[in-house]
Amino acid sequence: MTKQHFLLEALIKKLEAEIVIAHANILVYQRNSVGIGEHIDLVETIEKEVEKIAHAHDKIEAIRAYCK
Image (cartoon, rainbow, N blue to C red; front, side):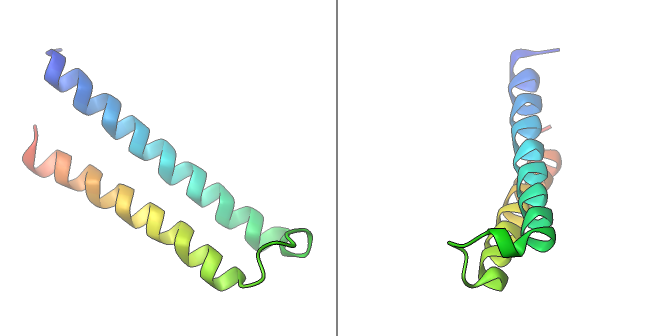
C-alpha cells in the first residue's frame, strides 16, 4: 500500500467514524429526548447531525471518485 493510499484510507475511516458518531447522537436524541435539557429544538439539533453525516458521506464519495 502506498503512502498516499494509506493516507486516503485513514481519512475515509475518520469520516466513517464521524458518521457513526452523528448517527449515535441522533439515536440518543430520539430515545432520550426528555433528559436532554439544553437541546430545546430537537429537530434542529438532529438536522445538524444529519448535516454532519451528509458532509462526511460526500467527502468519502469524492475521495472514492477522484482520488484513487
